[in-house]
Length: 144
Image (cartoon, rainbow, N blue to C red):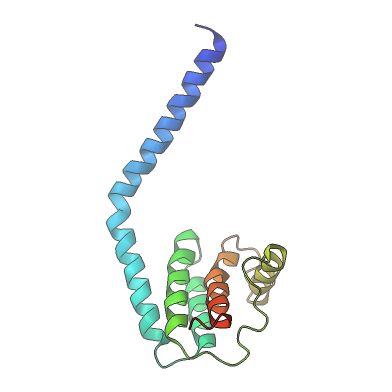
């Protein structure tokens, strides 16, 4: 068997093992992940009722600071999105928030936001601001 074929088979086996382990992990954890996402959505919706948009952002960031990381950014993004949808929009709240299609401005703005709140070294922090941008785009379009 030629060397290139051996290498190709080894790479293929590694890919299959990697994908297989991902599927097994998902099957074992999906119920808990889905439940956690639903819980974050319900908490966000409840928190947003009777409060304003800035408090939703502040609360999501506060929750993230207590437990930073990939999972936390996911749950707190869900929380923020649902909270913002239920909250009172503050006049001028979205004025400095760029559109998600403004890629360079978005990247710079998110980095600035993370720096402003003391999370400039957190690699997941910029993702926290995605729901805010989506919310502001919808509010500008009059969809809220």
